[in-house]
Length: 269
Image 1 (cartoon, rainbow, N blue to C red):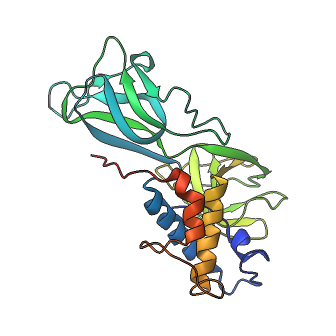
Image 2 (cartoon, one colour; image 1 turned 30 degrees about the vertical axis):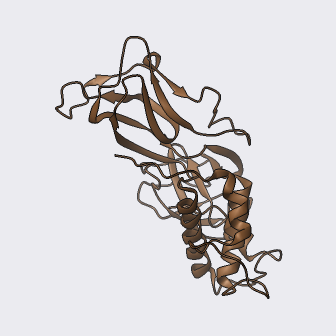
Image 3 (cartoon, rainbow, N blue to C red; image 1 turned 30 degrees about the horizontal axis):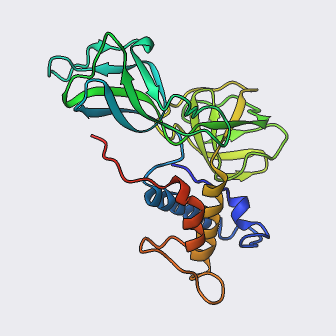
C-alpha cells in the first residue's frame, strides 16, 4: 500500500486547486490507484517491498531477478535436494549482485536496482524449478529522507494513529519508516497521523516516544506522472481539447515522463 504523490501535492494550487477536506478520501484512493497504474505500465514498482521470493534456475552461474534493492543476511538460500527445504544458506561472499554499480540505496538520481545475482567460486545455483529462495527488499530503489518530526508518544503494535511533535513535513500519502516498520499515512489532523501499519511486507512493532521518522521518496518523473494522471481522471478527460491516451489509459505526458523506467515484463515464480 502506497502512493507516489501526496494529497497536499494533488490539492495544491498548481494541480487541482482544491480547498477543504470534503473529497480527501476519494482523492487519496485516486492517488493509490494511479500509482498502481504507473507500476503496471512500467512493469516494475517504485515502493520498497520486503518479501521472500522463489525462482527457477537454468544457469548455475547467473540468476535473473526482478528489481532487487538488497538481500537480507542469510537471505540467499538454495534447495540442493529437491525437497523445497532451502537448507543451503549462502554467505554474502558466495554471490555478487549485478550490475555492480547499481547502488539502489545510494540516495541519488543515478541509483537503479540490481537485476541479477552472480554465483561465487564455491557455489552454483541448482538448475531446476523453484530451487532458489531470496529474502530481501525489492523495488527500483530505496531513498529515505529524515523528517523534521519525531514521534511524540509511544506507539503500540496495534494502534492506527501516531502523534508527532511540532512540524508538518509528513503528509497524507507518505510512506514512512519508524524503526524497521513501514507505515502508510492515510490522513493527518494537526499532529496526529492516521496510519496503516506494517505495510509493504514490514512487521508491526512498538515504537517509543522520540523515535526518528524517515520518509520514502520516489523518482521525480514518477511523482509528476501520478499527479498529471490524477488531474486528468479527476477532471474526466483533462484540459480543453482532450489528452492523448495509450490503450492502458495513461496520459501521453505521463507516459513520456516514465518511459525511461519502462521495461519488458519479467515473470517471478
